[in-house]
Length: 275
Image (cartoon, rainbow, N blue to C red; front, side):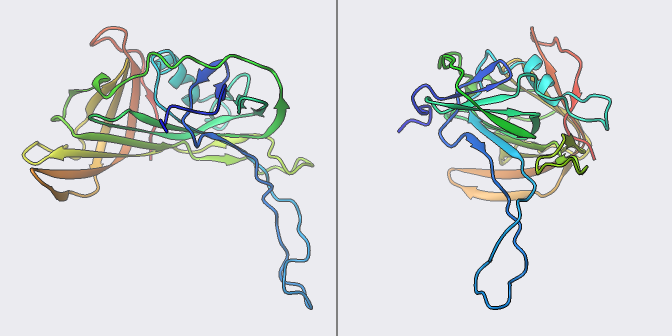
Protein backbone atom coordinates (compact mmCIF):
# COMPACT_ATOMS: atom_id res chain seq x y z
CA UNK A 1 0.00 0.00 0.00
CA UNK A 2 1.24 3.49 -0.84
CA UNK A 3 2.49 5.52 2.13
CA UNK A 4 0.29 8.36 0.86
CA UNK A 5 -2.95 6.44 1.47
CA UNK A 6 -4.22 7.48 4.91
CA UNK A 7 -7.63 6.50 6.24
CA UNK A 8 -10.51 7.70 4.09
CA UNK A 9 -11.01 11.43 4.71
CA UNK A 10 -8.50 11.31 7.56
CA UNK A 11 -6.24 14.31 8.02
CA UNK A 12 -4.70 16.63 10.60
CA UNK A 13 -5.19 20.36 11.07
CA UNK A 14 -2.52 22.36 12.88
CA UNK A 15 -4.52 25.51 13.50
CA UNK A 16 -5.98 26.12 10.05
CA UNK A 17 -3.16 24.31 8.21
CA UNK A 18 -4.31 21.01 6.70
CA UNK A 19 -1.68 18.30 6.51
CA UNK A 20 -1.99 15.15 4.46
CA UNK A 21 -0.45 12.66 6.87
CA UNK A 22 1.10 9.27 6.29
CA UNK A 23 -0.20 6.20 8.01
CA UNK A 24 1.19 6.02 11.53
CA UNK A 25 0.33 9.64 12.29
CA UNK A 26 -2.15 10.33 15.06
CA UNK A 27 -2.85 11.44 18.60
CA UNK A 28 -1.99 9.64 21.84
CA UNK A 29 -3.81 10.40 25.12
CA UNK A 30 -2.12 8.16 27.71
CA UNK A 31 -3.41 8.05 31.30
CA UNK A 32 0.10 7.50 32.75
CA UNK A 33 -1.04 5.48 35.80
CA UNK A 34 1.09 5.52 38.95
CA UNK A 35 1.32 2.21 40.79
CA UNK A 36 2.25 1.92 44.47
CA UNK A 37 4.90 -0.57 45.61
CA UNK A 38 3.80 -4.19 45.70
CA UNK A 39 1.19 -4.76 48.41
CA UNK A 40 1.68 -7.63 50.87
CA UNK A 41 -0.40 -10.66 49.93
CA UNK A 42 -0.76 -9.70 46.26
CA UNK A 43 1.26 -10.70 43.20
CA UNK A 44 -0.05 -7.90 40.98
CA UNK A 45 -0.59 -4.15 41.31
CA UNK A 46 -3.67 -3.77 43.50
CA UNK A 47 -4.59 -0.21 42.56
CA UNK A 48 -3.29 2.90 40.87
CA UNK A 49 -3.50 6.67 40.93
CA UNK A 50 -3.86 8.73 37.76
CA UNK A 51 -0.58 10.28 36.65
CA UNK A 52 0.39 13.38 34.72
CA UNK A 53 -1.41 13.46 31.40
CA UNK A 54 -0.23 15.05 28.17
CA UNK A 55 -1.72 14.97 24.70
CA UNK A 56 0.83 13.94 22.06
CA UNK A 57 0.31 14.52 18.34
CA UNK A 58 2.81 12.97 15.96
CA UNK A 59 2.63 13.68 12.25
CA UNK A 60 4.51 11.91 9.48
CA UNK A 61 4.07 13.66 6.15
CA UNK A 62 5.59 14.65 2.84
CA UNK A 63 5.99 18.45 2.84
CA UNK A 64 3.59 20.28 0.54
CA UNK A 65 4.26 23.62 -1.04
CA UNK A 66 1.11 25.18 0.42
CA UNK A 67 2.21 24.72 4.05
CA UNK A 68 5.99 24.18 3.81
CA UNK A 69 6.51 27.92 4.10
CA UNK A 70 8.46 30.23 6.34
CA UNK A 71 5.25 31.68 7.80
CA UNK A 72 4.11 28.24 8.94
CA UNK A 73 7.46 27.01 10.23
CA UNK A 74 8.30 30.26 12.00
CA UNK A 75 4.87 30.25 13.69
CA UNK A 76 5.48 26.74 15.01
CA UNK A 77 8.94 27.68 16.28
CA UNK A 78 8.04 31.14 17.62
CA UNK A 79 8.98 32.19 21.15
CA UNK A 80 7.07 34.61 23.34
CA UNK A 81 8.33 36.60 26.34
CA UNK A 82 7.26 34.10 29.03
CA UNK A 83 10.25 31.95 29.98
CA UNK A 84 11.37 32.30 26.33
CA UNK A 85 8.44 29.99 25.68
CA UNK A 86 7.06 28.57 22.48
CA UNK A 87 3.88 30.06 21.09
CA UNK A 88 0.62 28.13 21.42
CA UNK A 89 -0.83 27.03 18.10
CA UNK A 90 -3.99 29.07 17.64
CA UNK A 91 -7.02 26.85 17.24
CA UNK A 92 -5.22 23.82 18.63
CA UNK A 93 -4.60 20.67 16.60
CA UNK A 94 -7.44 18.56 15.23
CA UNK A 95 -6.81 14.94 14.29
CA UNK A 96 -9.56 13.39 12.16
CA UNK A 97 -9.71 9.69 11.41
CA UNK A 98 -12.36 10.07 8.71
CA UNK A 99 -15.27 9.56 11.12
CA UNK A 100 -14.65 11.57 14.28
CA UNK A 101 -11.99 13.92 15.53
CA UNK A 102 -10.04 15.02 18.58
CA UNK A 103 -8.97 18.62 19.21
CA UNK A 104 -5.80 19.02 21.28
CA UNK A 105 -5.59 22.31 23.17
CA UNK A 106 -2.54 24.21 24.41
CA UNK A 107 -0.42 22.50 21.77
CA UNK A 108 3.18 23.52 21.17
CA UNK A 109 5.72 22.26 18.66
CA UNK A 110 8.00 19.78 20.41
CA UNK A 111 10.41 18.97 17.59
CA UNK A 112 10.72 17.30 14.23
CA UNK A 113 12.89 15.89 11.52
CA UNK A 114 13.46 16.17 7.78
CA UNK A 115 15.02 13.42 5.66
CA UNK A 116 15.89 13.82 1.97
CA UNK A 117 17.66 11.50 -0.45
CA UNK A 118 17.61 10.97 -4.21
CA UNK A 119 14.73 8.94 -5.61
CA UNK A 120 12.76 9.02 -2.35
CA UNK A 121 9.85 11.14 -1.21
CA UNK A 122 11.08 13.65 1.36
CA UNK A 123 9.72 12.78 4.80
CA UNK A 124 9.19 15.09 7.74
CA UNK A 125 8.07 14.17 11.24
CA UNK A 126 6.39 16.80 13.38
CA UNK A 127 5.68 16.42 17.10
CA UNK A 128 3.34 18.55 19.21
CA UNK A 129 2.43 18.34 22.91
CA UNK A 130 -0.78 19.71 24.43
CA UNK A 131 -2.50 20.28 27.77
CA UNK A 132 -5.88 18.66 27.09
CA UNK A 133 -8.33 17.51 24.47
CA UNK A 134 -11.99 17.52 23.49
CA UNK A 135 -13.87 15.31 21.07
CA UNK A 136 -14.64 17.18 17.88
CA UNK A 137 -17.29 16.19 15.37
CA UNK A 138 -16.73 19.26 13.23
CA UNK A 139 -16.27 18.17 9.63
CA UNK A 140 -13.80 19.53 7.12
CA UNK A 141 -12.65 18.38 3.74
CA UNK A 142 -9.24 16.68 3.54
CA UNK A 143 -6.38 18.43 1.75
CA UNK A 144 -5.58 17.60 -1.84
CA UNK A 145 -2.51 15.53 -2.57
CA UNK A 146 -1.00 17.94 -5.08
CA UNK A 147 2.03 20.21 -4.74
CA UNK A 148 4.15 17.69 -2.88
CA UNK A 149 7.79 18.69 -2.66
CA UNK A 150 10.39 16.34 -4.12
CA UNK A 151 14.08 15.65 -3.59
CA UNK A 152 14.51 17.83 -6.67
CA UNK A 153 13.51 20.83 -4.54
CA UNK A 154 16.63 20.37 -2.34
CA UNK A 155 19.95 22.05 -3.10
CA UNK A 156 23.12 23.13 -1.33
CA UNK A 157 23.39 26.91 -1.46
CA UNK A 158 26.85 27.56 -0.08
CA UNK A 159 29.62 26.29 2.15
CA UNK A 160 29.31 22.58 1.37
CA UNK A 161 29.98 20.05 -1.38
CA UNK A 162 27.03 18.04 -2.79
CA UNK A 163 25.51 15.50 -0.42
CA UNK A 164 23.89 12.09 -0.97
CA UNK A 165 21.38 12.51 1.86
CA UNK A 166 20.36 15.07 4.48
CA UNK A 167 18.65 14.17 7.78
CA UNK A 168 17.98 16.93 10.30
CA UNK A 169 16.50 16.23 13.75
CA UNK A 170 15.64 18.96 16.24
CA UNK A 171 14.05 19.06 19.68
CA UNK A 172 12.44 22.06 21.35
CA UNK A 173 12.86 20.68 24.87
CA UNK A 174 9.11 20.76 25.64
CA UNK A 175 8.17 20.02 29.26
CA UNK A 176 4.98 20.44 31.34
CA UNK A 177 4.45 23.34 33.73
CA UNK A 178 5.09 21.79 37.18
CA UNK A 179 2.49 23.85 39.08
CA UNK A 180 -0.24 21.94 40.92
CA UNK A 181 -3.57 23.06 39.47
CA UNK A 182 -6.14 20.61 40.82
CA UNK A 183 -6.11 18.40 37.71
CA UNK A 184 -3.84 15.73 36.22
CA UNK A 185 -3.28 17.92 33.14
CA UNK A 186 -0.52 20.56 33.08
CA UNK A 187 -1.45 24.23 33.05
CA UNK A 188 0.79 24.78 30.06
CA UNK A 189 3.62 23.23 28.10
CA UNK A 190 6.94 25.09 28.23
CA UNK A 191 9.84 24.97 25.82
CA UNK A 192 13.43 24.62 26.91
CA UNK A 193 16.61 24.97 24.91
CA UNK A 194 16.75 23.72 21.35
CA UNK A 195 19.06 20.93 20.33
CA UNK A 196 19.66 19.66 16.83
CA UNK A 197 21.61 16.95 15.06
CA UNK A 198 22.26 16.75 11.32
CA UNK A 199 23.45 13.62 9.51
CA UNK A 200 25.03 14.07 6.10
CA UNK A 201 26.11 11.32 3.73
CA UNK A 202 28.66 12.31 1.07
CA UNK A 203 30.59 10.49 -1.62
CA UNK A 204 34.23 9.72 -1.00
CA UNK A 205 36.35 12.47 -2.46
CA UNK A 206 33.93 15.24 -1.55
CA UNK A 207 35.14 17.81 0.95
CA UNK A 208 33.43 17.26 4.30
CA UNK A 209 32.09 20.12 6.38
CA UNK A 210 34.53 21.80 8.75
CA UNK A 211 34.04 22.49 12.43
CA UNK A 212 32.68 25.99 12.89
CA UNK A 213 32.18 26.68 9.16
CA UNK A 214 28.56 27.57 8.34
CA UNK A 215 26.73 26.13 5.35
CA UNK A 216 23.25 26.52 3.89
CA UNK A 217 20.84 24.13 2.18
CA UNK A 218 17.51 24.99 0.56
CA UNK A 219 14.39 22.86 0.48
CA UNK A 220 11.44 24.37 -1.30
CA UNK A 221 11.43 28.05 -0.39
CA UNK A 222 13.07 27.58 3.00
CA UNK A 223 16.78 27.89 3.70
CA UNK A 224 18.45 25.98 6.53
CA UNK A 225 21.74 27.50 7.67
CA UNK A 226 23.85 25.42 10.05
CA UNK A 227 26.07 27.79 12.02
CA UNK A 228 29.08 26.65 14.06
CA UNK A 229 28.69 22.91 13.33
CA UNK A 230 30.68 20.30 15.25
CA UNK A 231 31.53 17.10 13.36
CA UNK A 232 30.87 14.36 15.91
CA UNK A 233 32.44 11.54 13.86
CA UNK A 234 33.94 10.80 10.44
CA UNK A 235 32.30 7.52 9.46
CA UNK A 236 33.42 5.66 6.35
CA UNK A 237 31.30 3.01 4.71
CA UNK A 238 31.91 0.74 1.75
CA UNK A 239 28.94 0.83 -0.60
CA UNK A 240 30.14 -0.30 -4.02
CA UNK A 241 30.51 1.10 -6.57
CA UNK A 242 30.70 4.32 -4.53
CA UNK A 243 32.40 4.83 -1.20
CA UNK A 244 30.19 6.81 1.15
CA UNK A 245 31.04 8.79 4.23
CA UNK A 246 28.58 9.71 6.95
CA UNK A 247 28.99 12.81 9.10
CA UNK A 248 26.88 13.26 12.24
CA UNK A 249 26.93 16.97 13.02
CA UNK A 250 26.04 18.60 16.32
CA UNK A 251 24.48 22.02 15.79
CA UNK A 252 26.30 23.83 18.60
CA UNK A 253 25.11 27.37 18.06
CA UNK A 254 22.17 27.87 15.76
CA UNK A 255 20.39 26.33 12.85
CA UNK A 256 18.72 29.26 11.18
CA UNK A 257 15.57 28.98 9.11
CA UNK A 258 14.85 31.64 6.53
CA UNK A 259 12.30 31.98 3.79
CA UNK A 260 13.03 32.76 0.17
CA UNK A 261 10.71 34.28 -2.39
CA UNK A 262 13.43 34.53 -5.02
CA UNK A 263 16.86 32.92 -5.10
CA UNK A 264 19.12 34.88 -2.79
CA UNK A 265 16.26 36.69 -1.05
CA UNK A 266 15.74 35.69 2.58
CA UNK A 267 13.64 36.77 5.55
CA UNK A 268 14.84 37.09 9.12
CA UNK A 269 16.24 33.83 10.54
CA UNK A 270 14.91 32.07 13.62
CA UNK A 271 17.08 30.04 15.96
CA UNK A 272 16.07 26.38 16.07
CA UNK A 273 19.06 24.99 17.93
CA UNK A 274 21.21 26.38 20.69
CA UNK A 275 23.31 25.02 23.53
